[in-house]
Amino acid sequence: MSVTTGWPESEIVQRPVPPDWIVGLDAGQLRDYSALSILERREQPAAHAPVPGPVSFAERWGLKKLPAVPMEAHYACGHLERYPLGESYPDQVKRTVATLRQLRETIDRAGGGRLILCLDATGVGVAVADLYREADLSGATFAPITIHGGDTPSRDDRGGWRTPKRAIVSYLQVALQTGRLRIAASLPEAAILAQEFRNFRAKIKTSGNDSYGPAADWRESSHDDLLLSIGIAIWYSEHAMGGMSAAMSEALEQAMSWQSGPEYPR
Image (tube, rainbow, N blue to C red):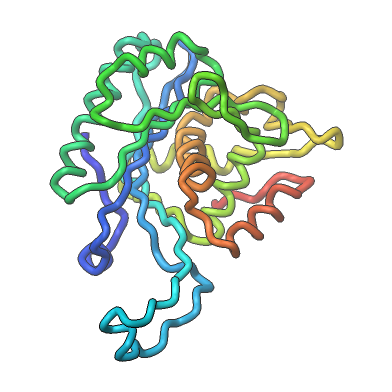
């Protein structure tokens, strides 16, 4: 496995804090693809943060506290992968474990950073999630996520999350529109992901529930696996890790109130 960084070398050098790595895994049913994405997560000053002025003598020597600069998370997707169709769940776990082991080595070389595995467990149930709970995840935080059609995210009784489909779509849409998500164009699966973006449509029913594509199922079709793997990773970061600034929160509220499908980049 190779991971392509989406960050210019100058940004990596100038930013001393090591990034976090979020692995999104959409575990498809046996007739569907399972897809894995890797997001490199870095915090940067928010787009609307005030420009800091000259540092005073008191601030320089710690006699006066520097003003806090609002931060927001930015993401670079450097790896996309579809698992072989029909691969057994135990073999998928082994493949994922190997990926996490390599990422842990990358993190250790960089001097730290968090590692998170977000699993979309909606269609595969508790048994598959338990396979990952029992596996050696190289110290990764395990976050199983179940997608539903309601309005409010919540924790389940096994330490996982339940979240509305509309929230995942909205967080992903805002990250794209604000330029906080970069996807390496050189990735072999980038063209497939671009097609998934074009095909994906979200509509909010007048009843308040969500309908995605032609069916009100938890996924639009068997061909949005890469999209969902990125979506759950960004949702976890923004919701559970606090990756969104106040300005981004306002944009999210607008996105969540849409009554028609969002436009995805072509």
